Every structure is written in C-alpha cells, then in structure tokens.
Amino acid sequence: MEAAKVTVKAVALIAGDNNVRGSLQFLQNSDGFTHVKGRITGLSPGLHGFHIHALGDTTNGCNSTGPHFNPLKKDHGARTDDERHAGDLGNIVAGPDGVADVSITDRQIPLSGLHSILGRAVVVHADPDDLGRGGHELSKSTGNAGARVGCGIIGLQSSV
Ligand SMILES: [Cu+2]
Ligand SMILES: [Zn+2]
Image 1 (cartoon, protein in one colour):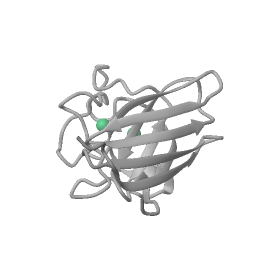
Image 2 (cartoon, helix red, strand yellow):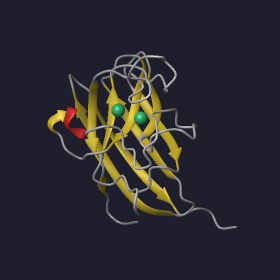
Image 3 (cartoon, helix red, strand yellow):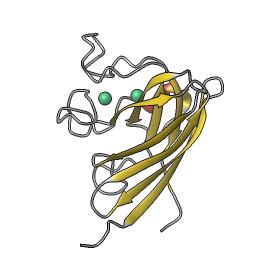
C-alpha cells in the first residue's frame, strides 16, 4: 500500500483582535483527509472554538466571514459527530502562554472539489465551542463560542 501523498496545499495567516496572530497550513492528502497544522499566539489560556466559515471576506474583520461552512445543511456539532457542519473543527487549546499548537486531520475540509474550503475563512473564537451540547440557544448553530478573535482567508499555496 502506498503512503498518502499531499495533493493540494493551502495557507491561512491569522490576524484579529489585540495580539492574536498565527499561521496555518492545510495539506490535502490523496486518501481524502486534510491536515491542518500551525500555531496561533496571543490567545487567552484555555479552549477556543475553531471553525471554517463560509466566506473569505474580512471587510468588517472576522465578522464578515459568514456562518460556519455547512454545504450539507446539518446542525452544529463536534468534529467527530455525524451531525456537524463541515466547518466544525471543535476547539483548540491555548496554554498559559496564550499559544495554541494546532494539528487536526479531517475529511470534511477538502481543498478541491464541490465542497472545497479554498477562499473561505478559518476563525478562532474567544470562548469554547460547546460542540452542540451546551443547551444554549446558539449551541446548534455556533456552539456558543462567542466573539471572533482571529481569522484568516484560506488561499492556495505554491504547488507540491
Ligand atoms: Cu466560528
Ligand atoms: Zn458549526
């Protein structure tokens, strides 16, 4: 069996409130999975909701990036749920130093085809994503993750 090969690469530079900054790389593999990796700094310690939002528009900052990317018209959920938005990547964790190292592998965030996330935005929130389970009126749409403290547009990176 051949090892999975990287077929498409993308990058997103994160900027936002205060000192939130970061860089993320997206690597789509021939096995259908996309690996998101990188580092985001300037966060408050703890969990932060982490999603792909539908629009690559930062005209009014991260608030212009639209709702969670949801091509299959599902409810919000955890990354491991069947009922989830394609853009639902759960939470990232910042340490006491405000740094979050990101490494997520998922099959609902391709960089090619009908449900490609290229040209959309990756968003980091102020609060934890409750993964649809919080019982708040926003749990089934946004995970009640609060303000958008950082975001970046996902763009194609130089070919492999
Ligand atoms: Cu979000
Ligand atoms: Zn969602």
